[in-house]
Image 1: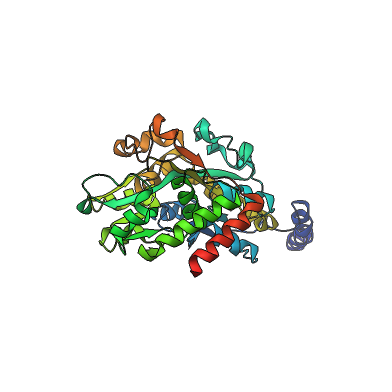
Image 2 (image 1 turned 135 degrees about the horizontal axis):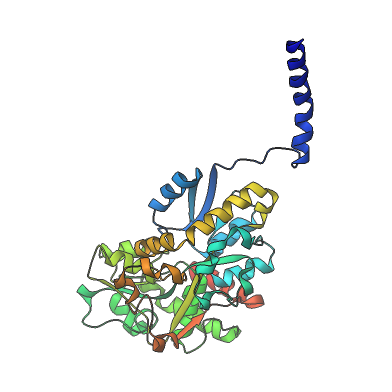
Amino acid sequence: MRRLRLLSIITLVALLAPLVLAGCGGKKEEQVTELHFFNWSEYIDPQIYDDFEKEYGIHVVEDTFASNEDLLSKLQAGATGYDVIVPSDYMVAMMIELGLLAELDKDNLPNISNLAETFTNPPYDPGLVHCVPYMWGTTGIGFDWDYFDEPPDSWSYLFDPDVASQYAGYYSLLNDPTEVIGAALIYLGYSPNDRDPAHIEEAKNVIIAIKPYVHTFDSEQFEDLLSSEEIHLAHGWSGDIFMKQVEDESIDYVIPKEGAIIWADNLCIPKSVDDSPARKKAAELWINYLMRADVAGKNTNYVWYASPNQAAEEYIDQEILEHPGIYPSAETWKRLTWSEPLGEAQALYDRAWTEIKSE
């Protein structure tokens, strides 16, 4: 009798189990053990991947892209395998307009409170609805002191044919239309966000004129080319140059006197991830982890880019915090310009870039 009663209980539990699960959403929540991070190259301390996996049991797979335009084309072509991406400010605004980004659940991002006030309401994503700032920096000129008596602190070193010809074959430009055309526009005295077709055409012609002197257009290895002395000047991003300076003290970086682009890269979740609540939650867990003060500080100490995370400053090396090329002075800030979405003018930049590269 006791055995029959036990079997009856077991049978009852078996019958009720599906109903209990249905009452909790119909099925057990998917377990995420792998997360795909689409990032710029050499833009995170690799140890952070291991630390995150040890703490949460989620393995992060990194893939890299060379420009914001490459990232956009991947998403527009239907790539759905990425959980977190790292677009720059102007590209964030463009992706929001195109409906490519998911909205963030701030309840899963308590570390967002660590951000400096300057980055809490950026013009490209007011209220941080879709993204969280990851790193920020400037685009200027990296150089090797072995070949200079004074810093090459002007865009004329790259865009004035009389000056550039002296470094023929020994300097590089970024493989990035927004950055290269923007720098040429600054050299000409215009805004890097200029939408005037005549000004964009003028910038295009400037670049075509100096193209014979350019060693390569490169966005991923310019700092290595500089360190190996294949080039002496590199149009590049501040942190990449400073990270190489750790290995080679002759490498340095300067913000040109005419001005430069300031930018912020951001942690965002593609809209396609909304289809999987478990993936979305894991993606937000990863973003929140990267915003943790000690993690953000460790990351900046590795990549040598300025952090928008104010709480992280106690973990950042003093050498980095006090470096004017990483954290610019108030005077230098006046010469910096944020990139903006170009709207219909983007087609002018794209066409100019195609002509530059095909010339």
